[in-house]
Length: 169
Image (cartoon, rainbow, N blue to C red; front, top):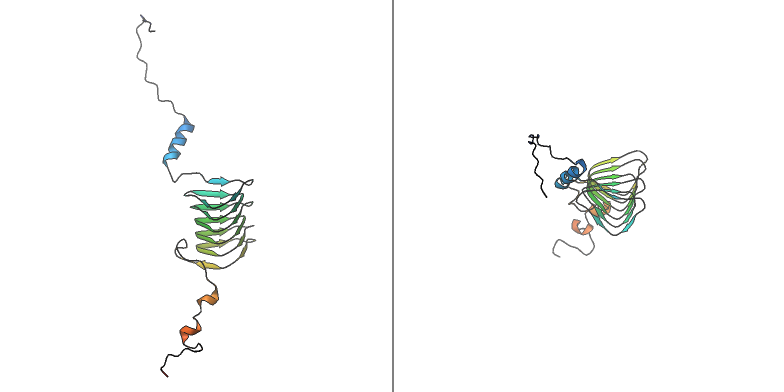
């Protein structure tokens, strides 16, 4: 198994450890939660049901259900029917449902039919939006927009309704 070599061995300098960039990058990315890549729903996918992620989502396919994540981008071919909830929402595709986000960007070509609750809203030219908009300091906690008629005081609270008397007869 071992052979004896009569030649004196020279002290070789120690070899540096082998570095495998791909494996080191994978290990490094696995330990850093903030450096995750976005999860992608490709254009040829259709999902029936809700999606929830703690990271970023890129949606180029069709989702029939609610979507929540930290950062959501709806690509030009992306379509969502349901509520979209995130810190940041960028829309290039179509949404039929409400959006709740701190920052909402409707880019050129976007089609949104539903209400938006936001802290920051940007609508580029040629983006289509149909619905109500409500600014909120914390849009992820607040309730959705209400119709303008709901915010008016009712006639009974003003004491002018029929059959209501505030004075004894």
